[in-house]
Image (cartoon, rainbow, N blue to C red):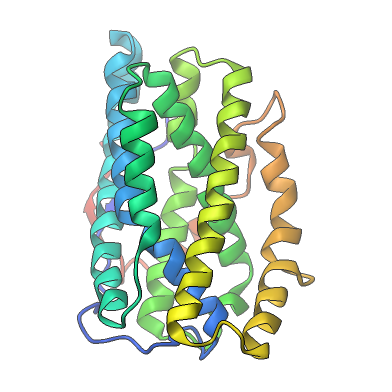
Length: 276
C-alpha cells in the first residue's frame, strides 16, 4: 500500500498571469496551458473511477486499499480545484478550452454506459502512466520551466511530484479487480492516441488564439521541447513502451525526483491530512 498525503498548495492564483508566463516561450506556455485545460474534468474522472473500483472489490481488498484510495482522491481533488483557478486565468486571456468538452463527450458516450469497474480503472491507470511520464520528465529537466513565473513553476512541480507519488493506485486497483493484460494494453493504446491528439489540438488552438502559431521561434521551441536531445518524445518513448511489458508496474519507474521536491518544499505545500 502507498501512503499518500493530501497537501495544500500555498500559491497565489488570483493575481493575473502573464500571457507567456513560461519564460516568454510561447510554445511551452501553450503546451502547459493545454494540459491544464484537461485536468479539472480529467481529475474528476479519475476520482469517480477509483471510487467505482474500490466499491467493486471484495471486502478484504477494499479495506486494504481504502486509505490509499482516499489519499488519491484527496490529491486529485486538490489538483482539480487548483487547475480550475488557473484555467479561469486562461479563459480571461481569451483561450478556449476545447479539450474539456471532448473529455466530457467521451465520458458520456463511452464510459458512462460501461458498468464494469475494470474498464474505468484501466482507462485511469493508462492516463496516470502518461501523467507520470510527463511528471518525471518535467522534474528531471528543469529547463522546461526556465524563466517561468515562480508561483506557476511551483504549481507544476507540486502537481508533478504528487502524480509520481500516486502513480500506482489505479493500476493496482485494475489488477485487484482481475483486469486482463490484453485489455490493459488495448486501453493504453486508445488512451495514448486520444492523449497525444488532444494535447496537440489544444496546444495548436492556444497558439492560434495567441497569435504565435506561425512564428519561427514557436516551432523552434516545439522542436527542442519535443524532439531535442532532452525532448519529451525522445526521453518519454522508453517509459511509454514499458507499460506494454507483461511484468510492468508503475513503481518500477523513478519517483525520487518527486520525493526530493516534496521534502524540500514542505512549507509551500503543507499537509492537509497525513496518511492514516
